[in-house]
Image 1 (tube, rainbow, N blue to C red):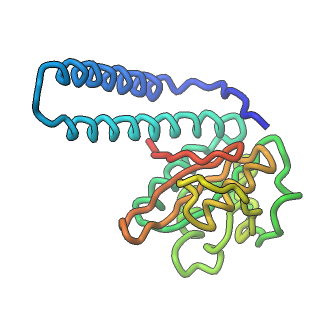
Image 2 (cartoon, one colour; image 1 turned 90 degrees about the vertical axis):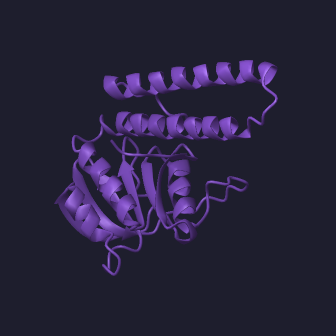
Length: 209
């Protein structure tokens, strides 16, 4: 199913994205002129512009994630804070946020939690060694319903962003219903936690405010 266009007002973030796009366009124009005027190598400029595009994509993904979440939960900023903290601490996580479609037909039963959404509780659940950290947390409205869910895995091939089981689970559930699935995957070789979210079978990198 196609994602509905979200209706929300995050004007400051939207303006920041627009400024970033304009700045990158100016850099492209400057690079284009330099190619005609300079003989020196411009590969460094290409690398910087590529990084700018990736930063814009990540910032835009954050904007749309908050837009998609806000009609279905009031405490989406608590979720954003948890993503930022978990990613910064390099703690892996898998969080499914139910929207209009019920996730019940697609996920295996988990351990009941039934507590209000809070960044501290989410961070505690996904703390390494916690018995609940292995599996997905299910959020419905402003409630952490349960934890330790097993999600369906995607069979999609050829997507370089899908690098492991958590990614495959995030994309897999988003293919079955309109849930948004947030995934934080630990890439040991880079010593960093990469946060993404899946919607409609697509995976997007995300940063937090």
